[in-house]
Image (cartoon, rainbow, N blue to C red):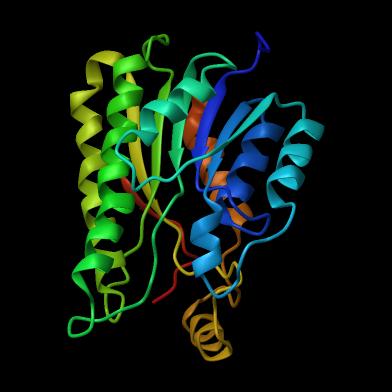
Amino acid sequence: MTVDRPLALVTGVGRTVGIGAGIALRLAASGWDLAFTYWQPYDERMAWGVEPGATEEIDRALTMRGAATVAIEADLTDPEAPGRIFDAAERLGPVTALVMCHCESVDSSLLDTTVESFDRHFAVNARATWLLIREYGRRFRGAHGTGRIVSLTSDHTVHNLPYGASKAALDRITLAATHEFAHLGITANVINPGPVDTGWMPDEVRDTCLRATPLGRLGTPQDTGHLVDFLCSPQGGWINGQLLMSNGGIA
C-alpha cells in the first residue's frame, strides 16, 4: 500500500487499446493507485477476440507510472461479484474513486433481440453498475468531498437496443448517487464519449463518424481519460450530477 496515492477502481480494463485502459493509465500518471477488472470470456465472444498478455501489459504500464496495482477477473453477470471486487481492491487500501467502463454490447434490434441478450445487457450494464455503486457507498470512509463516481454511457439505441436501453438505466442509477451519497461528499457523473474506435468500427462507420465530427477525427481512449482524470481531481470536485458529452461535437 502506498500512503500518498489514492486508489481508483476501474472496471472493464480488458484490452490495451480500450477506453478503460486509457483511463487507468491517465489516472496512474496523475498519482493514483489502480485496481482494475477484466473478463476474458466477453472478449472471446467479440469479433476482436482475447488480446494475449493484455492484463500483464496494462499492469506493467501502470506500474511504470508509479502505481500499485491489482488486476481482478470478474464476471459482472454474477450479483456477488461487486463484493468480491471490492474485497480484492481493498488489498491496496480504501477505494476513493469508482470508474465504470465495463459493458455488454452485442448489436440487435427491436425485432430480433432475444430475452437472453436483453437480460444479459441489463445484468452487466445496469444491475452491476447499481451493485458496484452500492458497495462503494457502503464502504466509503474518505474525507467529505473526496469521493468520485464516474460511469461511461452511450445514447446509441437504433439496431443496438439492449445496449442503449441498459446504458440509459446506468445513467439514472449513477446520477441518483449525486443526492443519495451527498452526506458522504461523493460526486457522481456520467460521460458519453461518443464513438471511439477501439477495434470494433467497420470502415463505413469510421468514415461516417469522421464526416460528422467537426474536428475531423475520432475520439480516443486518451480523450476520455483526460476528462475522467479531471473529474477525479480536487479541481473537478464541483462538477456533480452531470451527463457530459465529450465527443468532439459529433452531430
